[in-house]
Image (spheres, rainbow, N blue to C red):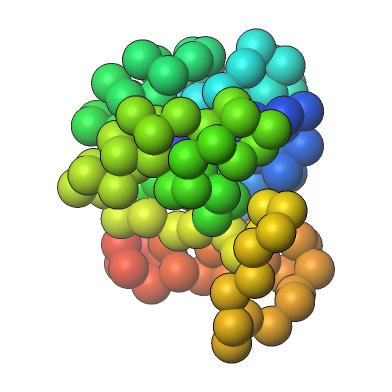
Length: 138
């Protein structure tokens, strides 16, 4: 099973997600660190992802292989993350058959009504619960 964690900018959110997944999920689950830039990829690799790749094409190709994609919601909003998210990246994530878990961390000038502002640590715990529930992992 492949979990693709996608992040950009400094990769801090992705690194926290990778670290928690590594601690809470079985070791047979492979974690891909997919960064929109090399700094983000490096941060996630330091958090113990199995493999890492950087850039638009890496995200497009790896999104097709993933069973699960975890990312801030901005990954499906072109031109967010200071322009790092391209329409091609957004389309690849949306078109992927992977189960998608999008963290409701809003980019500038966006607000999604009905989402409570939970701290990142709780969002990550919820992510792990959802993965365990959806994929029947004990």
